[in-house]
Length: 214
Image 1: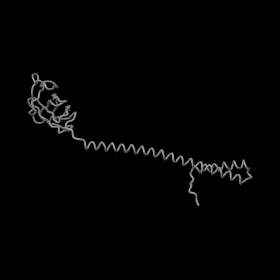
Image 2 (image 1 turned 45 degrees about the vertical axis):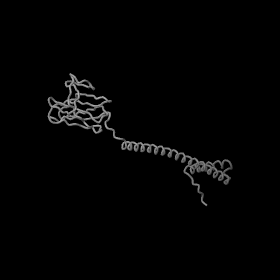
Image 3 (image 1 turned 90 degrees about the vertical axis):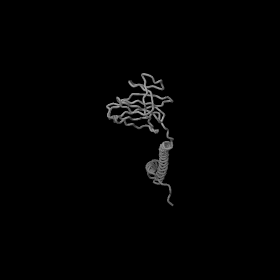
Image 4 (image 1 turned 135 degrees about the horizontal axis):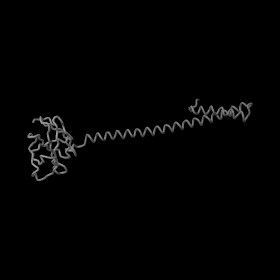
C-alpha cells in the first residue's frame, strides 16, 4: 500500500543532505569497506533529515496560514464596519425628519433691474429676537448671497435704488443712510419704518430672489 504521507521540498532537501552526511559518517564510523553499515547510516540520517524538513515546512505553512487568516479577518472586519457606517448614514439621511429653518440660510439676491446699484436690508428671527440688518449693495447684473442666522422658515427683505423700492406689506425699522444692525427698538429718528417683503424658504438651505424692473 502506498503511504499517504507526502514529502515537501524542504523535506527532500534535508533528506538529501542527511543522506550525504550519513554516508560520510558511516564511512568514517564503520569504514568504507562496510557497505551495509555505510548505507544504513546514510538511510537513517536521510530519514531524519526528511522528517525534520517536512515538519519545519508544515509548521511554516501553518504559521503563514494563520497570519493570512488574521490579516484577511481584519480586512473583512474593516470593510464590514465601513459598509455598516455607510448604510447607517444613508438610513439616517433618508429617515431624518425635515427641519424647517437652519442655523444659517444662504439666500442669493440678484440685481436684474435697470438700476446700476441696489441696496438690500433684511430682517430675521435670531434666538427669539427679530434682527434687522443692512445694507448690502448689489451691482447691476451681479448677485450677492446673504446668510441670515435664523432657525425660522421665514425672513424679510427690503431693497431700494433711488426712488425705486422692492418690498412688501410688513413694516420694519431700518436706518436709511448708513449700515445698521438693530433689534426690537423704538423706531424713532434716525430710524424709520419701511415695508419689507416676506420670504418663505420652505426649509431649504438656500434659494434666491431676482430684483427686476426699475
